[in-house]
Length: 582
Image (cartoon, rainbow, N blue to C red):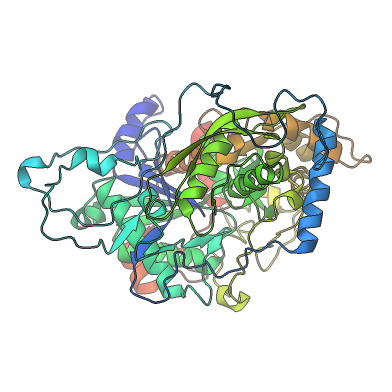
């Protein structure tokens, strides 16, 4: 379909986006939806399967290292005191002489809640199948709304009326999304998260085949239950995979196999998250800083081309801030005497994430709030506890001082698992383009045989500075320091943008001739920027020369030197930029 230059963009999205599904998988959530929609469904990327194993495990990776060592605890306390001095608040064990509230835990009934609406408690998931009379079912089509998590605790109850005197009660074989996180610990289910810390969660406790099967089941469930795309119609749809830069070549291939072979999409293409974020905000050059739930990364894009040597990955994110919030409150004895465990009870992590989103911010001075904390005990209804939370500006500062976070350790499988000599994303700077010649901006860059994976234990400001300085050209560096873009759910933390600007400016070495930094405001919800950019790239890619068709993938895969080999970093982007600039 060829559109004239006078075509209305809305019409293009409506016509071309109606059969394109954009899939943006993350460690904690998956964003998925039709390209013609304004926002995607944002669904927890997990599944709970019924199990009969004894002893029962509530989580597939529960036995991995989550204990804080004595040395880490001491480093965390030192990091807290450093942050406290910057924020002008009392040190960790310092008593406050003139506090408006008592420092220790006490009754706070007299203090009003400091947000306008009372947060309801999460309800336990009904783990039994429902026998639904034909007269009580309603056909409703789910359409994602702004900020929609698509998993209201009473979503299915509001659509399905169940007869109270049901004679048979049968366990559901699997439960996906937020419902999987709200299953009571006493029920015979095991929670699985197929992706952890930006990689497939393959380990001795979670075999490769189980990880891939769980990914397929989750995505199939979303396509049928949320997008209402039945299996027999799937070949008429195309898929766009918007993949984080942390994934290795074999992981990308496995996901492509799920999309084309198992989900039976007619064709598919892969885009990197950083590149998609640039197009999602209508930019061409920027330093993309992705603040995800479990991984924080930085990568630079110049004129619609990803610079792979600038990638920096950090093994912490928004969920670590939530756990740090719990640790801070317990240390100050402001947390109610309830058993809160984000690892063994995922519903507690849901609550902590909500508290972080509502109350955590970055600003000087003491930040306190009165909030409603919920307890979820085995076999009991959720309890409510009115609580004063303190030092709410400390946990988000862990982005700059990661020793404060002490993230859980999820060791990856042996690196040999990722060995793949068929590179999916890199080595694109020596490609020939229509009209002859290679892309000129790559002439000064060295050629790397493998993708440089950088996972450093440094703060956010140092990671951004390091990423930009790796470009090696002062003109580009100045442009990138004034074109930083924060995306991801944690980018919504109040006060984060000025904190990033201030700390990045101080992190630039004194011998660099750079004295100005700026974070650009996002034009849309930062959590959905990459998904939206993937939709734009897919719709603008008129020729679809790099799209992979289902039959080709199943028969041949992708071979080095073949005309169907996907090249992400230059060829497609040059096409899209040519279209945008024409």
